Length: 128
Image (spheres, rainbow, N blue to C red):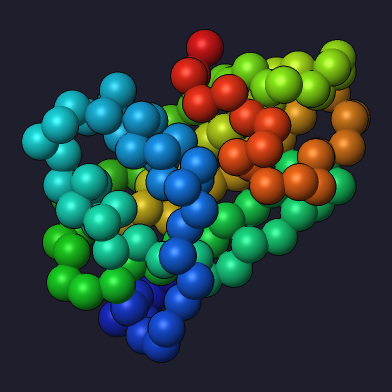
């Protein structure tokens, strides 16, 4: 996304689970002093959609959070669930593009259907 458009309009907030997942990934990868955490504080959901076997959460950064160099990176984490096999584990990838938090992708590890319920109702929020 064009950084000039970040923060335009009122967007939906990240869910508590999405926020915790992203924060945990950033802390593990970059530590507590990361400027990505400043971006996360102003992050909003531009769009959220399911694909059948996954979830995409496009982020928009509100406010004046600074670009973190020109970093293009992906951070991956796996989480247990309260669901039976094959949905007993799901993965998340956080995409960072041009120094900004870009989007969060959630996915199953098979062709299993992505659970339709809120993450908070079935995800165990301790990364594996």
